[in-house]
Every structure is written in C-alpha cells, then in structure tokens.
Length: 461
Image 1 (tube, one colour):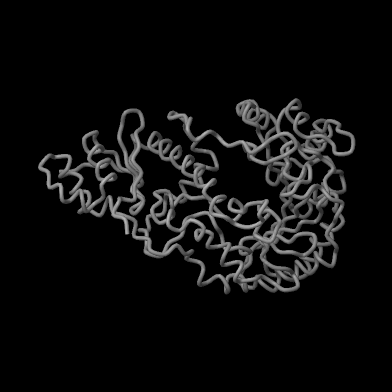
Image 2 (cartoon, rainbow, N blue to C red):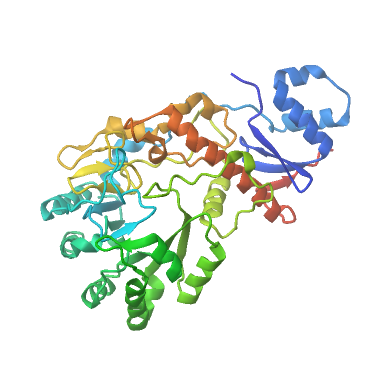
C-alpha cells in the first residue's frame, strides 16, 4: 500500500494550505513547512523519515505526523457503508415515488436531452402512463414504506400536465390509502398548460410546483419554443405565473419555485435579478450540461481554471460540500466515496412502462435498470449501482477528494455502450476534482480570518 499522504496542498493569495482527508481539516502552514510537505508528498512517509534532517521545517512536519496528520490512505476495500442494510432499507423504508406520467412534451428546448431522438436518448413520444401502472406504483410504495413517516410523490415527464387527469387520480388514491403518513406532492412543469382548474387543485393539495423558466423574455424565447409551431413561450408562461401570484400569494410564496438553465455566455446577474423582481423566494439556476439540438456538453477546460474563482457561499454546491465537510469521522479501511445513494430508497423512478430506475437523472437503459413493478427491485443490480466505486477502486483509495465526490450511476453510464465504464467515470472524476479545488480555495478565503472547527492554522512549537 502506498505511503504517500492523503492530502491536497494548495495556495491562495500567497498563503499555503493543505487539506488532510483523514482528519477532514484544512490547515495553513508557512512556506518552508509547505515545501517540506511537498517533498513528503513526492517521496512518501518511509523515505521522508529516513532523511533525519535537523532543519526546523522538517521537524515541524515530523511533529504533525506524530499528531496523526499527513497519514496515507487507510482504505483497503471500496464498499458503501449502506450495502449490508440495503435489503432492509428497500423493503421497509422507501421515501419517494417519482412517476413518469408522460414521455410527451409541448415544448422544444434547445438544451433538453429529449429534444430530438438519437442513439443514446429517446425523443419526446406520445406515450402516457396508464392508470393501472400508476396504481401499481402507489401500491408498490405502500408495501415498501412501513417505516417511513413522510413520503414524496413527484410527477415527471415530458410535460406532466399533459396527463393531468392521471395526476388527479393518483393524488386522490394516495390520500385514500396513506392515512398516517405526511405526503408531499411535487412536480416540475413548463407552466404553459396551467389553468384555473389545475391551479386550484394544486393549491388545495399544497402541491409543490417547480416551473422551468429561464429568465427574461429574450432568454426564455431563445431557449424554449412550442413544439408544434416553434412559437415563443414567455408571455404565455408569465401570464400563468402572474395569475398564481395574484390569486394565491401565500401559495406562490410557499410552494412555487423556479428552475432556470443558463448557458455559459448568459449573465448570471441578469437572470438572478429577473427572479428577484418576480418575487421568487427560491430559484435554482444551473449551467446547461445537457446535449440538445445545437448544444454539446459544456465542460470547462480543466487547464484554464481561474485561480481566483470563488464559489458563492449561498450556492447549492457550496452548501453541499460544506455538509460533507462537516463530517469529522476518520476514514476507515472499508470506505466509499460520496455521491451514490441507496438506489430506490429516497426515490424510486417508475417509467411509463413500469420499469424501475434509481432516479430521474439516469439514462433509461439496462445499465440503470433496477427492475420492474412486476418483479420488484433486483438487489444484485442495486448493489452494483450503490457501489459504483468498483469502477475506479484503486484510484478512489488514494484520492484526496473521496469525501466530496459527486459520482453516481447517473455520471458513469456510457450511453452508447449502455453500461457503466471506468472511462466514463474518470471523466466525471476530473470535473469533481476541479470543483473540489475551487471549493477549498473558497472555503479558506471565507474562513481564514474566522475561528472555525473546520480550519486551523498549523502552529508547531
């Protein structure tokens, strides 16, 4: 096993730091200490100890080693800690049902992976989920959630409102059989099909709405057209939004959110100001990374990362990384990187044909298929998806960013081969590492002058 320390060394504004993965702390060190640590990284602990130098920097680093820092990775086996409990979780603890009520859509969005059919993804299809499949899906959740006190029922598409009648039947049925659980209903829509009847029903049942709206009129109409005639969509959608805001202000404040997809050349400030003016409490703005009609994957060049780039502390990425950063558990010999969740536990995605998938983000092919409503979840396949680290286990064991990783089956499937591959996983690993480096630099900029349990100045007597 390698004796190279499991750390990340980096500099910010002429200050020197290292992040120690084992202890999950970030430390600031002097320049001479930093150079000694770089030497340690290069030659390993055994060779470094044999140097037996007398200079202070060397002795400082040796003192840090005796304090439990700068240790190599203890990981021997890459295995997810929930593996041994997964069968029980899936039998009794399911918490969410995501129903693909239709594959159809009345919009044609430039960045949508379903905007045109190809060898990897389907196009929009005039296929709706039947009531028989929807009812069987609810029954499946009922049978597998006795230990869950709260449940989420979400309706997906396509454009879910194209099958609104089914949504009504499902909510009515759910309310009739789940007598003791708190149920939260959610759906993401483009907003164009809302009418008084639909809005009133959603208000009555406190349905959480996420409306896909990309921002000001010139941006929305550039991205999102009507499928039938290529017409603009902004004015129609905004009329429906203003109706909710005017007639049901409390519902608008509490239950309506927005999802905007931004392209790299569009101003984030302009889009954010648009949603502020709209009175949106919570608008999620993402950089487009979906293949579509005329856009390819938008991945930053890893060789030109802006060293001054800072992550907004209010951003979802920062919050997500901070949540992982708060864990002070020492790494163990059996460990798995962050990213995967127990497939089917927090949510089970059921397609129109009754096939089961881990979530709405995965490609619908055999690589991601968990099972069917008829046969249930294939536990062997669930194990493979949960323990996706098997694709890169040797790299994972020595990766300084294993606590922050975002990789799951959604990122690891080669769409053309329809299977998870190591090559596909390594692509997302590069992106994860880039994001983690940016986060660490943002973290020390935000906390260097503050007392925090996650950051320490390295003082060696």
